Image (cartoon, rainbow, N blue to C red; front, side):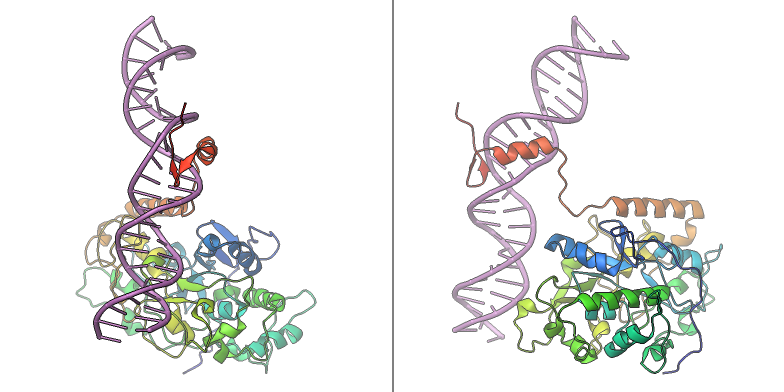
Length: 387
DNA sequence: CTCACGCCTTGTGGTCGAGGGATAT
DNA sequence: CATATCCCTCGACCACAAGGCGTGA
């Protein structure tokens, strides 16, 4: 592994506050709620009940700060939503910047513990002692995070460049009529740390606060090993099984962690697709949300192609091995035929549809609800009223 | 254009049971 | 590995008030 001297570009970070507490900086985005949340409020909101815990959350886009990120650009060290990824990595001619290494990142559900969150946002290589020691040494009076040498953090922030994708992967043969295939996003690498983008300092700070509130969190024991078998660290209260997913969990195959003698019901279930099994938690457990929220649906909404679509967006998702090898996510024909106006229109329709999508039960007529609740029933069925 | 009227459609929730996955034998 | 059992999820069912819509005055 070669460490690159490249440091994240210090573009202005979005300064949006959490929609819930309006105090801390928002670092996550909940699609179902269309809300930007900090880690603390995310836990509070999504641990309320089982329904809320199913909400799919993603990191906030580093660029616009208003949409769920689905792409990690290693070159820019940023997490981007599909639109910003498109804007940042394409030119007006729809050619893709070939030099940027990008890959999909995951959303998650449930009510993950701090340990899980560390993993989910890409801090899985961070020693947990460093998490706390940096809290003591690495924050100033204003609780602003600063790099700390010698405790693992500085090393952590020396970004490593996985070898999973190279420029060659993005070079398109000259005989290809258009360059869209170049915009495909490589599969999830085994080394998936440092996907937290440009808000990593804020994330780390919030996670540190969260860890202090987590009664069972013991950094002395919370090492990476325990992440893999983190049953013992998972507080029985105030949390529900967390998982990362594509938002298409219906067809996912649930897998459990090594039992460690813990009853399965207490184990956190994760969802896996066709991931190559590795020893690293993220590689094995995390799924990407590329299919649902990345550039793919945005850019070839109605053009068919490699990603199957269904009316409900759940049952017929593609089984293409997008996580094991690069998949030509763009059709050979069709996309280049879309002019920018059509594309904008398609994107708008997609975003609007996504925005209005509802998973929770919605009562249109409260009066009917009241009426139904007061009606006489026989075995649950409405019964005729005898006059 | 507004209003009244009549007819058709819609939506509401608790329970049951089919179906399928997980677990035990 | 095959079968049995358990457990969970989810759709169907019911009656009828309210909403929607067309028509005529």
